[in-house]
Every structure is written in structure tokens, then in C-alpha cells.
Image 1: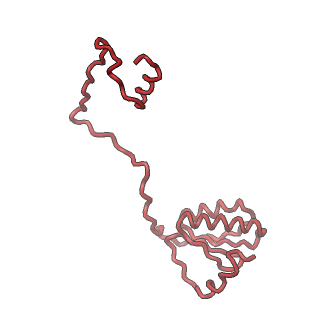
Image 2: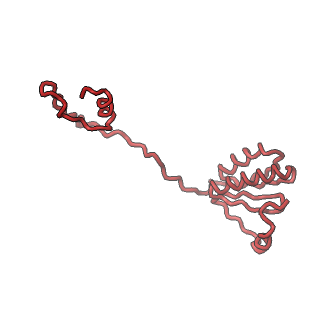
Image 3: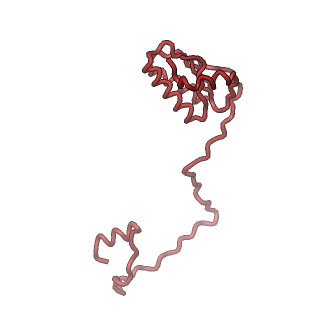
Length: 153
């Protein structure tokens, strides 16, 4: 095994050692057996993927955040509260229409990613409700406005 490339491949485990190339006087020594002490415990193993924690309602949830964003950068406040399980009401009446559409796109992705829901309350007011919050209301009115699109400015 004089070839350095071959030695490297064997070292990395990409090739098997060929004992035919080794001269009898250069034979590798017999491998030593490694025995663990009797009181040794196996090393702890950390799983690569952990199961998601069950989502439950926070104890004493008694808050709804109302946000009147003026710029898209206010989305951070919305996201932080929603991630903590707080329902968020977004009033877009103080935003320009392009920024409002952008913010609603963000809020839609946020609610989808965290298994929540986004619902339009009025033309410029939306409710983000986390997974553990049930929202009840008049569904007949919401179904009649399906043709209007999600964001009717």
C-alpha cells in the first residue's frame, strides 16, 4: 500500500485494506480489544429531531393585542406576540395599500406556519388567532364575500 491516495481512502473508510500488498514482515499487529469498565455508562445520545411540544393554551390567557401599523417594520411586533400565543388584531387603516398587502401576506404566512388562522373582520381589520384559540362568528356573511378576494381595499 505505497500509494498515498490509497492510504487516504483507506483512512477515510472509502476503500478496504488489501492485505495482499503487505509483506509478511510488515503485517499489522493484531487489534487490541477495548473493554469498557464495569461501571461505565453509555454516552447520552441527543436525537437530531425532537417531537414538537404539544400546543396548549397558555395558563391565564387574557390578552388580545391590537396593532395599528404604519410601516411594514411593525410586523415584528405582530410576529413576536403571535408566536407567544397572543391573538392579534391588525388595523391597516393607517397604512398605504401596497404596504398593507405586504403585511397581510406576511401575516398569512405567519399564521399558516404556526397553525393559526387569519380572518378579515372588516376591509382593513384582520384577526390573527393562534391554534389554541377558537373564534366564533357569523359565517354566512364571510361566505358571501368570497368573490371579493381576501384584501379588498
